[in-house]
Image 1: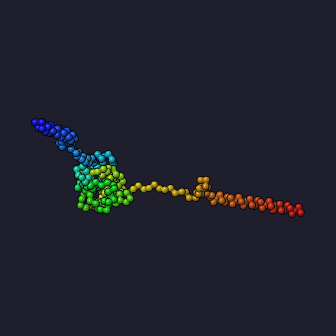
Image 2: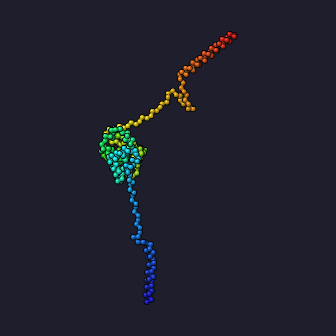
Length: 266
């Protein structure tokens, strides 16, 4: 009986020790269902929406080019490319003065389809920053939005970027907007392909430079003190010679008189 009680006591003690030893381990290890899940990476921000009509209206003067975009509905094509594609868009925008330099009838006789192709000719269907043009120039000619035969040649000479068309080779004069997916660059001439403008356009002649006034001949050079000497006329020179001759004659007369007086006294 005593042995049986001792055995039960021993089993109870062993069970208590095991319970105390296992409890801290269980408390330190929460069930897997209670662990917080690892955070998933944040999605990339969507490209900023750019309203091309507002951009060209506020950063001009690009009214002529904007009117052509609206008139030919190309603005919708450009807007869709800018905000609904991964490639983005690059637009070369001539200023109002660039259009004014082209005399009629170079553009006034174009059909609506020709005007549409002309406007599409001013854009690449991909975003290019200014730093991209150096590598892009090695792939000349570059296809434009107009496709087919409407190609452009780019040159980058120490940061001076020129966009070559068949009848013009304008430079990029300023970066109007350049943040992916939209790049807009101002050019100082209209890009003109031979497929649309078959003859060389007549440009408004540049104003003649102001005439350079030449110095009046006969003026003496400016001296060390910054003063010029007046030129001597031939009349004043002749007067000086006459005065000198009269003085010599008078002196000769008095000298002859004096010599004659001395001889009489002797």
